[in-house]
Amino acid sequence: MSRYAVAKPYALPASLDQLAGPTVGAVTLPRHLDWGPPYTYDLGDPADLVLMYERVIREAQSPADLHEHLDRNTLLRTWAELFLPRELRALWQARFPELGPRAAAA
Picture 1: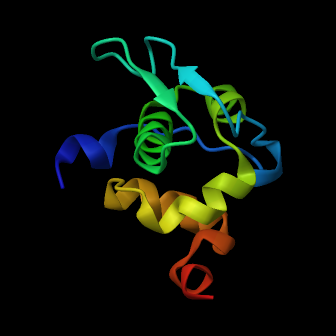
Picture 2: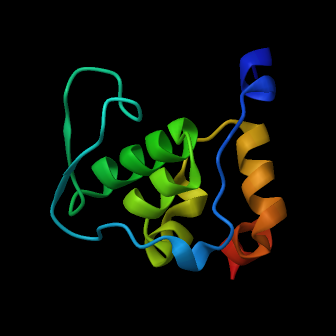
C-alpha cells in the first residue's frame, strides 16, 4: 500500500447507527467525494452500490459525508466486498468490531 494511504486522514462516524443514507434509487455524489467524470450510482445494482460505498468511505472529509451517503445495514451486509486500503479497513474494524472478519463469517 502507498505511503499516502497510511498518512491520509480518514473520517469515521462515532456510531454506525448514525449512517442513515439512501438505500434505493439513484445517487450522484458531490464532487469532493467523487471527483471523476460525473456518474450516477444505481443502488439497485450491487456493483454500483459497492463502488459508491468504497468511494464515500475513502474520500469522506467528515463524518457528515458518511452519515448522508451510507446506510448502517447496507454497510454491514457489503463490508466484506469493499476494496479499501488496509489501513482504512483496520481503522473501521478497530472502532466497529461488528465489521471484523469474524462478523463477516457469521
